[in-house]
Image 1 (cartoon, rainbow, N blue to C red):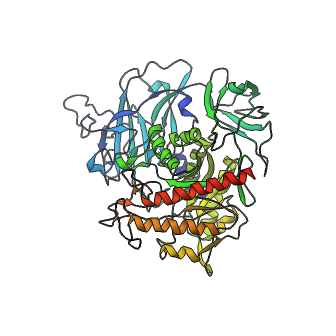
Image 2: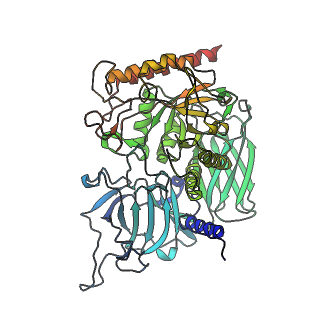
Image 3: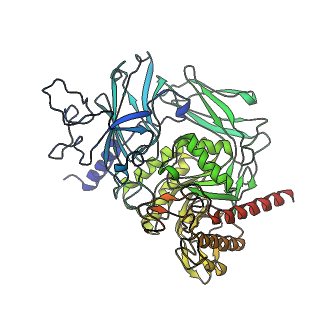
Length: 619
């Protein structure tokens, strides 16, 4: 009799393979590519008629009623019950929710179609379709041929396109986008943000040589507990798409007059080398160098900053110097337009708002943001906490869900592992303590360290509010495995009034840096009352005054805070008919960009902390 555990393992393997993509191509903006952004036609398909027949069986590849096939009837007698026309069109990149009033709350399937011409494929070239993000599940078809499936609403993916499939005229690309929430996905059914559906980031047709530079890491080698040497050592690796033993790979940093050649073994080439006269990247001097990686037939350029970051004892060290993180949490949303944020212009809006608050750090909650966000942070000198959406309560006993979370972790790290601004990889937020959960999260931490050993790993942890009188203890068992012990607290909003902070102290049994990853309360912008009235600006102002006073009593391993949140954001969970109306009002800016009174309390606290840091530096 066939062993049931073997059968289960095979089914899991088959399921995961079905959703696997080809290896992610990093630094996509440096590749030769044709943008497929712009106007796409669409068909709304809540019953998934274009995917399943009337017996709810998946349609065959050449089924004329499958929405991935050509919608033009062969003749006037041919039956077609669907079609793509310009009357029904959406802009890509962009969520569908803000583009059509009828899509505001829609969760389900929308088919996107983009027609394009393409010059005859170049001899010796290969082609990939690259998507910056599609929320949540994407089935991708080109000229009626299925290229692949991807799950995960916030990370990039790519599929190779057979050159025989590309035509000089009238190519049609169809993407089935499904943003329904499921219990066995990441995130799961229950979140506190808007479930924006659609092709939300860039789409490109990328051209590369037969063997090309797929990915690379170039970082400074840390010296535990110390600043980089006067002539620091860089180390890393170059990954070719195919094995090519003996291939010569060149690394150049023209500004430093640096050039070094290394030799590939199989598809990988590892290296370490000294970088004389290097200016380190930091928050006040975010120096970026043009770095060129090339082979005989492929060249990739990038802007890379060089710095070290580590949790050392009870401190966080940036380039060997103690760091205090003046942070703020940020959602990937442009509130005024009620849409998902995308691209450099949106990144600049959000990061400039954080800079005005006097922040040196942002927590990008609760998922990887658009690549423009982290690249803009690189150029502005803003530190970044980047997170996968392992959020609240998922099935921590499921191996399949663990693999889905690992896939998103891999895609996040692969895209951004050369960004100097990113100092923390977070594996989740507010996950309830249990042995199953701790093992699940520990596996993610181990995977993150395998993928990148140069940054801190963390997660927003649970707090024991009753361990000691007037002392809240951050004793989540996951604290044993993270580098930075981070926790969320809402004293004065979800527990008592703000004056509870006056008698509250904090501790942790872990001899590690301690970071407050969330704190906040709600206020509707422009609503004025006395300080005891919930949802008034005065209440939130009082809340932040009490919180910042409490922070003066934090233990000596307190290394920073990222309050919740920069700007009010859309959430179907927030349903007070007067003060919320579908908005989470914890922003320090309201949805119109107006600063609430609490903004100035936090801004002043950050100014004081920055002044103290500078005074300590002078001593």
